[in-house]
Each structure stands twice: as structure tokens, then as C-alpha cells.
Image (cartoon, rainbow, N blue to C red; front, side, top):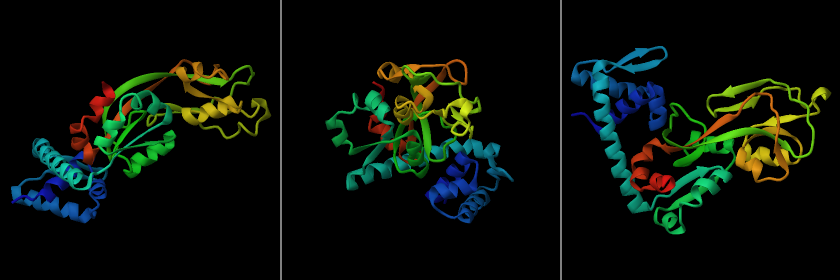
Amino acid sequence: MTSKTIIHHFYYAAKFSSFSKAASFLKVSQPSVSKEIEQLEKEIGAKLFVRGNRGVKLTELGSSLYQNAEAVVMATNTFYSALTRVNNKEVIKIATQPRLYEKYLAPKLTHEFIEEHFIQIHTGELATVKGWMDTGAVDLVITEGIFDNHPIFDYIVEIDNLKFFWAKKAGIEMAKPVPTFAHSAVWDHWHDLSKCLYNNPDYKKIMVIDTPDFSSRLIERGMGIGLLPEQMILNNPNIEKCQGPSTGNIDGPIAIYIKSERKADLLSAGITERILE
């Protein structure tokens, strides 16, 4: 009889297209995942994966079984999540950036709702939030950027889309920075790759920063230019729009992500509905 363990190994190997990534997620060894899947293939008398140097992909039979496996895994996760919450009052950790907390969370999550669902709010800069996601330290995230195929978190929905503009300290003139910028698909932002801004007198020691919560403080002190949402510029009398090294405005998608292993539990708690209402 096929065990729950084998179904989990099959599901996550298919989800990540990798036995090693499945093993890392499940906190088991890669050989154990391979062995379990080989045992399953032997039991049904057919191959479920095509093995390759760059990972694995489902066969036609494997694809037909994937949704069934997903239903089993999600149902199992829901049961154990509910059991854990009842027995241990498991905390739900929500992470976001300070300004996103003020805009999207603070008006929606009342004190009573937070207490009922044992919610903790964690705020930090963009890099800090990404670190929490990558280590699985939080359960639900509201942040900028669209993450494709994150190994721990599932993309749920885009809740907003902000327009970012180049900004500088009001009333000062700054030379145009060196246009050595690259677009990051991970954050959907522009990043400065130059290494001569502080050493080249032709550019008046201009820094370019694209992490809004941090860069707004540096910009206000006249330390450089950066990308900020329009509302942050309008609400700060010390900051104004300016010309940047790239033309046009930049979209900043704001989206919700949920840790895969707690997805069913968090959705059933109605937290995303509360945030979106």
C-alpha cells in the first residue's frame, strides 16, 4: 500500500522538478526521496519521472497523478495544521515592510483578529523580508516583487501596483549618476551596479538606492537619488521628483505570498480575505 510519505515525496519532487529540492524542503536525504519514488514506480509498474542532468519532469502518467497527490498533501497539511493550532496555539507570523504594514495591514487586522489567530507582525527592509522568506521564518508575506517558483512560498495574489519615481532631496542640484543599472526580475526593480559613484568627482558622490523604506531617509539627507512610490515623495516635504538614469516610471507590484506547508491552514483562517476586503 502506498504510504503518506511516498505521496509527499512524489508531490514535492514534481512541484520543484528536483529530488534534491524536495529532500531539502522535507528535511530528508536526497537518496531517501529517490528510493521512495523508485519504490512507487515499481509498485505501479511504470515511470513517473524522466530523469535528466537539470532535474526531473513528470511523465504523462506522473502528470495525471500529480493533482491527486496534491489533494492528499493539502488535506494532510490542513489536518495537521489544525491539530497543531488546537494543541499548541501555533503562531502565524506575517512579514512586510513598515510602509506596507501601515497601508495594507494596520487598517485591516484588528487587535481582536490578531489575538484570535495568534498573529505576530514582523516588519523590516526589503532584504530582511526576503531573508525571512528564504529561511521560512515567517508564514505570510506582503512585499514588492513577484517571485516565480519560490521553493518555500506560493504566490497568492497581487493586491496593488505602485508607480515608482526617481526622487532627490528638495532644493538641491545633483549630477546625473552613471547609468550602470540592471533590472532585477526577482524584485522588479532597478539596481545600481556602478562602483565609482563615491570615487568619481564628475558625479558628485551620488548614490542610487532602490529600497524605499531605507532610501527615503538617505535621500532626505541629500546622499543620493532613489526610486520611491509617489505617495512617499508627496508626503515628505524634504523630497521631490527628479530625473534618473532610466526613463519612464517603474511599476512596483505588491503581492501576498504564503508558506506552502501552511497554505491551507492560513487560507481557511480567512487572513487573506481580511487583508483584501
